[in-house]
Amino acid sequence: MVVSPRGRQQPRLRYSHRANSLMRVAGALEARSGRVHSCDFPSITARRLGRCWRQVGRRYPEARRIYLIVDNWPVHFHPHAQAAVARDPRLQLVPLPTYAPWLNNIERLWRWL
Image (cartoon, rainbow, N blue to C red; front, side):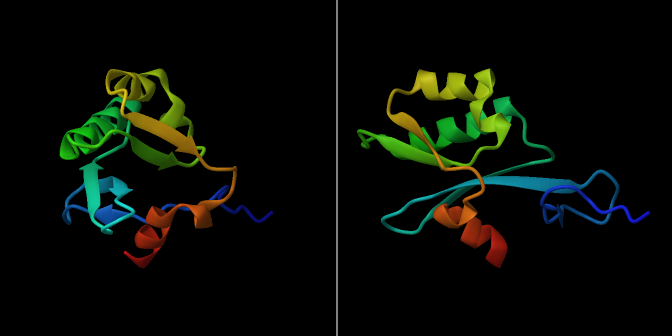
């Protein structure tokens, strides 16, 4: 019997050569300038993702609306992540269709990295 991994295997980036050093990155790509805002964590939880989204909101205090394009990863829709969006009425999630990573420009950056 051949066993193969399910789903897409995420690339891994290490903080250092020591144990427990994997890093996960969440990012936001500004459409107009191409600037990237990123947050890195040992693991991404809904609370940490919400904190990252709040940082994006603070980065653009003059913006009337900030669209966050998200894929269908369940963490994006967890109540803790949604609470961050509720705290800043300028943040609006725009969910992509299922299995459509080519529609999200930040995915191109992750692929390149």
